[in-house]
Image 1 (cartoon, rainbow, N blue to C red):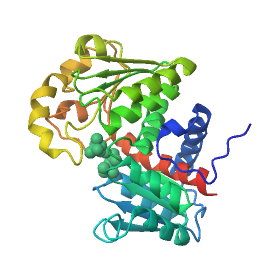
Image 2: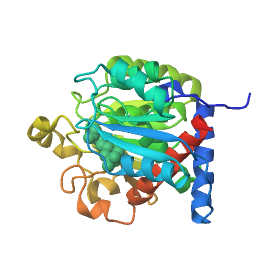
Image 3: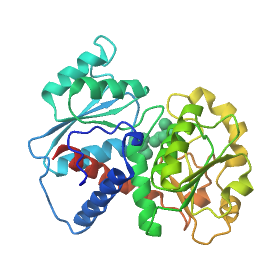
Image 4: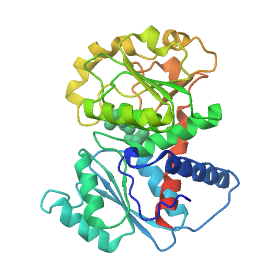
Amino acid sequence: MAVNLKGRSLLTLLDYTPEEIRYLLDISHQVKAESRAREKHKRFEGMTLAMLFEKRSTRTRLAFETAFTEEGGHAIFLSKNDIQLGAKESIEDTARVLGRMVDAIMFRGFKQKTVEILAEYSGVPVYNGLTDDYHPTQVLADLMTIEENFGRLKGIKLVFMGDGRNNMANSLMIGAAKMGFHYVIVSPESLRPRKELVERVTEIAKETGAKIEFTDNVDEGVRGADVIYTDVWASMGEEDKLQERMKLLKPFQVNEELMKKTGKEGTIFMHCLPAVKGQEVTFEVIEGKQSRVWDEAENRKHTIKAIMIATLI
Ligand code: CP
Ligand code: NVA
């Protein structure tokens, strides 16, 4: 059956089938080609997108706002200082009001539950622009970037280094399981994804042929990696853990020596950004030949445009 995502929210990639993810990636490649050809479309003319932020953002805000605006839509930025989100007014009530006035909602914040309530009560598509648990729009951009580099997704060995229980480690694990990757989290044992999520992705992996592994052995973990991925050691909202993480995660830093340990010439380095150079990755690696971080950042816009095209028109 042909894929149809009209009216759907994107709260986590757990809710999407591999075929639906494939469909979103196909549209992403198409809109990137249109952008390169300077083709203009007005797909969101007369539409409004509300963008709710409890946490800061550069890429996600820019990607949603520029993608929506250049297609003729109007995107409204609302920070938690501007609206009554869960403070004076419940999230349910805010969702109902937004649903009466806008065509879609993007939310970035703390709890996954908030984005779920927004979707349940607004009646319009809701996009998760990052929560403590997941960052699904980032993973679509990452899948696109990997596909551009290797021409495929299946069988790619993707290694996540560092805080193996953060939103990126979780979401990449889901994307990797859905698309048949060999995914390895290389982290201290105390920083692995929650058991219930591991069980879910293990079930998915059985169907797709993906392999999901966890290790604290850096040499073994990175051997043969096509992609080395890392993220900050303390995510937004857990800055108080930084000192402890710096000690714990120092052996998991991505540096030139670690990149050599893959034993492959063609290994690429990825990072969702923002990066703290000198902590999770060295200056030499992020600025080096193997780094794809700027393509990855650009692809946020194309993949986010693709999600909105697929779910709104
Ligand atoms: N990668 C990412 O989500 O970046 P921002 O925090 O700048 O949106
Ligand atoms: N794990 C990071 C990702 C930022 C895009 C954070 O949540 O801060």
